[in-house]
Picture 1 (tube, rainbow, N blue to C red):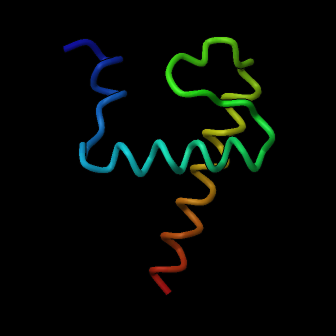
Picture 2 (spheres, rainbow, N blue to C red; picture 1 turned 120 degrees about the horizontal axis):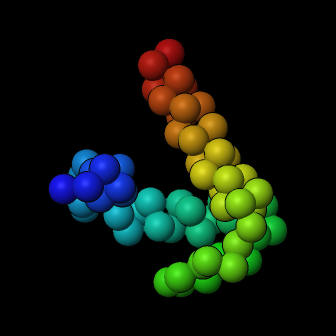
Length: 67
């Protein structure tokens, strides 16, 4: 298996739909036009802003749970 396949694999496949909804929600809030399927027309800045915000929110959520 190539490294890109491992990096893109969900550890919990059942969570894929929830992660897709989360990504769509974050993109919408950031004003990034994310469509279903291929989004190769996004700039690196747009794609990175979505991923970065998702990580920030997941970390914040985990920190709240650990209190």
